[in-house]
Image (cartoon, rainbow, N blue to C red; front, side, top):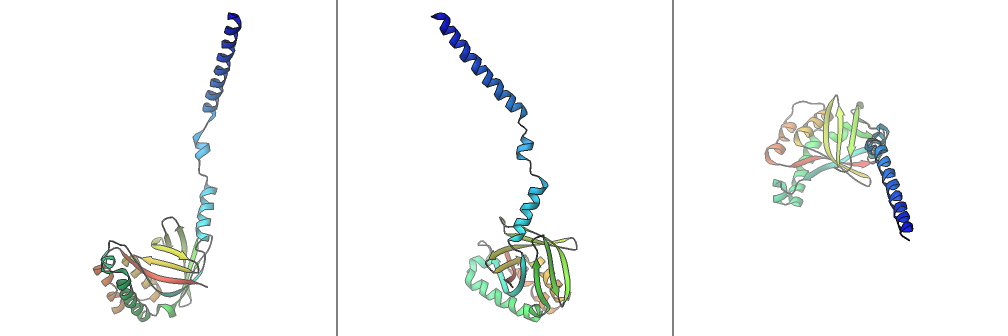
Length: 202
């Protein structure tokens, strides 16, 4: 009787020992770098998938205002303040003849962008981060980051005031004017406010 019990206990202990050794062998062959490694192909695929979300030929429709809730414009009352600011921007854009000079903004699924201003192309590369709603145009090595949000056939691009002035300079072809000087009121009177363009998909 006792021999049978001892043999049974020995068999159970041997089984547990073999399972433990198998677990050790598995751990030894487990390489976290192989399991969690992010390949270049994976990164490239994610980049292309993000670019496809905003790819297309976009045309300027009207000014756009993106305001943070803690900003002056937020405390003033977003609907009223935004409406007033949009009217001022619309006047400035019309003086700069943005709609006449700026034909379109084309974003490809490969990450290229092109703007045609007075028939002449401006080109570069861009990246789009859908999680943070940011789109960055790279022009002559200079990154122009914007808050970007797509809603169907509409694309909203908003820049901080310094970058907006740079964009307007690119689109208007002038470096100094009363209109550009007037736009400086944005940085002087508004905090955490980004302004830009509402675009329509062709």
